[in-house]
Image (tube, rainbow, N blue to C red; front, side, top):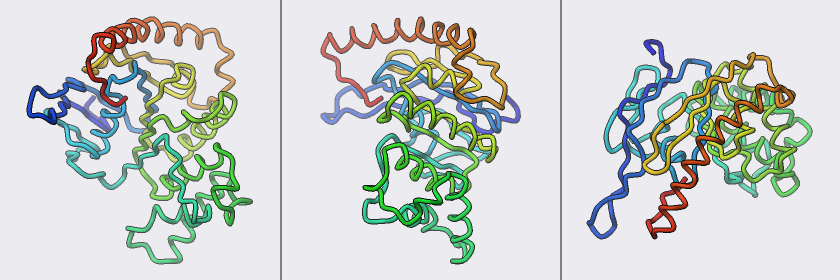
Length: 273
């Protein structure tokens, strides 16, 4: 893709062994292009290297081989300007209010105080958190706290948003509703979104394209185009095509998950998802 927003070429990650022996080949090689404004999801068996792939794209961990480019610039061992990351863990600071948690995302910017305040207020309104701006995380539900974490990323106005199992700790109903929120924010911001998830229904509902990763070392072995309209929400699960897509994903994923279980049964160490 000549106009790729994100481009990976022959990306491989090998974790060195603690005792100096053979390292753990966790990922790759992976080739991938993400279009600007695309919503791309990745599913795969546990321990296949999904989160490692996200961390390499973010610059949180360096690739052992290959290249990662964002907007034509090479990504090295640091998060480039324009990339925001949301993890599964509840990362709210319990001693800070919602407003203060969100403002924390701007701590390293050179914006004037009034500009920061305006940006925080805009994101609070965008996320529907206006009634909870002065509340503390302990006073919020799990879904609301995750909204705060997403808002803290959005306040930096990222052009690429990386989501690592952001709704994994939520119940099914809340996850679907949070998915609606993410789709709305995706349309409003125009950002490119890269989602890691274990939930096939979540990937199918949210993404324009979905990649299935192999058992370790993780490679992209199938990429499914959903062909959903951009203006979509959780009602998309009612469509017959929704079931067909999730069935295709599961057919491939089941085979790879059985391979992973066989590896674990043989006593091989598992790599983080």
